[in-house]
Length: 598
Image 1 (cartoon, rainbow, N blue to C red):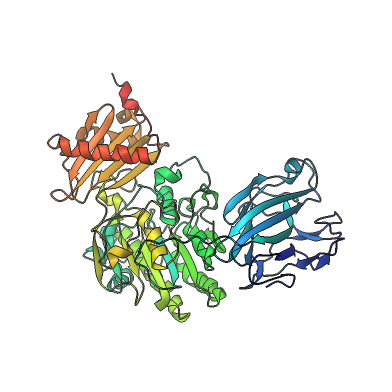
Image 2 (tube, rainbow, N blue to C red):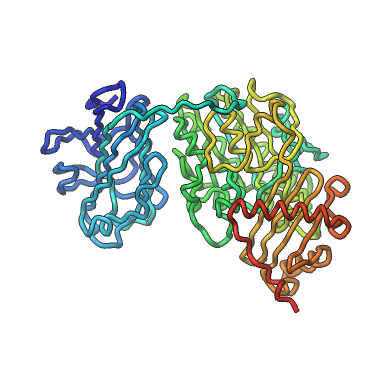
């Protein structure tokens, strides 16, 4: 523990004082403020490399003259400190300083203590009453042996801004331990590493293990032989951003709210990401994204909880660059358990796989897509080889899935993720962890994207946040759970170009779909949008301005015959359950514009 710690048996009068970015100094009271340093297990320190500029001020910061302080961070950059402490209650003093910028244009940042935001869009000039110093004191509880403090830049800097200059942590007493009986859960022993891979736009039926006649995916097929394949995994949304936020949080899209094409905002602090849980548990956390921000953009909060995060990879042909980058990052983990999130856009149109893959299955549109599947599969194998070189493959939970499928004219159109038919809604889900998960297991029954996060945490024996809507699949994997969800819901909202809101409610046999066009006469829209609505108005039942469809998935897996007229009772039951789900999620659906039709 730190040299000025009074006791190791409990919080007591434990005091740690850190001179952020500077050397050991003493203030006028005789208290020592310790020099900044990297985090060391069992003690304290900075979790991030010191990449920002170090400046020096003669201002009296934390009652200390001539203290070196850290320059403010650019948007998305972060500075994190971890203190390994006895469980208990602590007073945390955060001291800030500004030496150049003395106007309300000063850069802003957010500050979190134990994952809770204590300052947001903090501007020292305004918040300190046009002063150059500011102090924030909070009470924090330590229940897992760690105290985490995080500063996140929220604006683009010009010179400087709100900079943390010192941290003081003082113990005030032990937290009473509650005695309670925990519900029995199927759990595995850890710690295990985790690699979560999302292959954008990968159709379930184009993985050989799911029945595609061509061997497009030998690596994924091998993963399924060594692990668990979920036979009926369905999406909670039909496009990329909501699906990926659901993937990393386990929350329904209409709850987390990141469902719009053009209303960019960060994930609300009420929702916890997988990376945040793993970081709290002491894992190294890594994220690899690309120029498709919908699958990993900083602006949405995908980097939350990540020790190392990058989106520098190109929109296409990313996978060939990842094995070396991932191997280099994991070598830096040096034996520490890790969580790694990878989103690649390569299986998303335009299909232009590099090397031999682009034309290996032929020259048609679908052949090129098949080439993309083989391309990502091949380089996925190269990533696994890197894990093997590092001798961590056998202790790594690997999860491979997709955010949605793609249209190949099953309902008359190509490419777009603008329906909730099964070419979009069913996705692959394969998991493998030698010695923990069974081999060659095929799990029947409905599961959903929102189930992936809690399953990963359950396998790793980590707590599942309250904000998760999904269920762990581990009991079903071990044959101890029910067959699956009796009903699953999905939602898609497109306020740009296509102007509609879609909902679906499905059981294993039936699927009900309801569409609310925003336009009075959507069939008159130009281009592809109008064409799609002209087709929909031909096949759907129009009631109260909504387009309704019902399909028998056993008799009609291609969803070609709308049976709502002959089975109105089934449709009514599914729609009632859908409406109840929407109400439980506290979501207000958009109104249909077709109510205004003459």
